[in-house]
Image 1 (cartoon, rainbow, N blue to C red):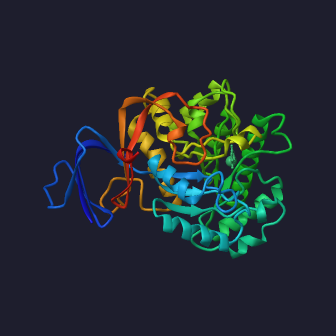
Image 2: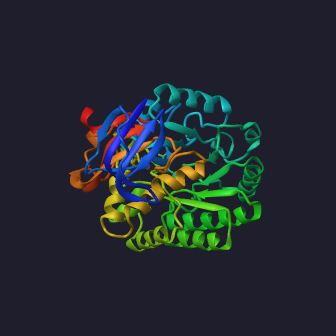
Image 3: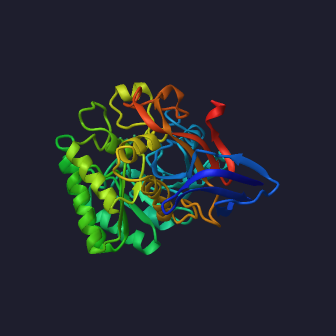
Length: 398
Ligand code: DOR
Ligand code: ZN
């Protein structure tokens, strides 16, 4: 399979120029200003932006057990529609993913759907019960990350042991920083306390700690200090926490924050403290939302929310956005994606950054239509997503 993309505005973390991309056997074979015809299919991209497809470190596809909210097929279609070709799946399924059996089942399903690549997290504590971690001894490749996302690990001693295990096995430990004994009354304190605690445990263990959906000024300040100190910590920020404040009444964990938090997070993005944008794509049915389920179906609105609130407003350029949506998250997972360079996988996304359009959840491929952003006018529309040079989403098919 060969494809020649001509006359595109090629943007990744380090380049922004008009040129061509030649793809052969799913790999980027040549990138240049004027690549000669190869006798293969030519895609004329005159006037449109081509970027590396996005990688999402934090996604809930709900399989097994909650497939009425989302399943691997609908989730994969939603990811492709959002411009993503790699996702890191959370373990708060039913049963929670605490064994290689479930990992293998999920990986097989993802492969048979074939639209995106996926990694499956294993829970930090067995069954996400918060009381033991003996299952971690049985965890092998292809697992890269552990996470009890949806809950914080209450026991500091257990979290330290889990981090020591991660250090030994070369795994990334992802922290949903929420002290549940406080979050009902004060979610800010709950996030700040647990962020601070996990950074101390990171220093103690030397494990790679990844802080999920950082949302407060204090938490990002602690992480900045930790990074300056040289701790092995990375962090992600969710698009909705950058785009909207707590003036919006919508349940999500962590909650929407204040303008001063958003400003601190944007400053941290500019300084290179934020490693990744991660959606925390959390699909729910409308009935579950009525019953108080937290979360936003966010993978299909990630690029427009980030483009509109970060690039369009002039905080960062498109190269920087590509860095935190593609290059760095791919690097954290250790995959050969996220750049437009010879030898990289040809996972690309074509976006329209000129047109202003309205978010319409009824068009989501996700089963979860839960978003507080319906009707919002945004910039940055995903038109086509390529995985290994093959089209996995095309807006014209809608
Ligand atoms: O809002 C959220 N929803 N935050 C989480 O941490 C979990 C997620 C979910 O699984 O629905
Ligand atoms: Zn979480």
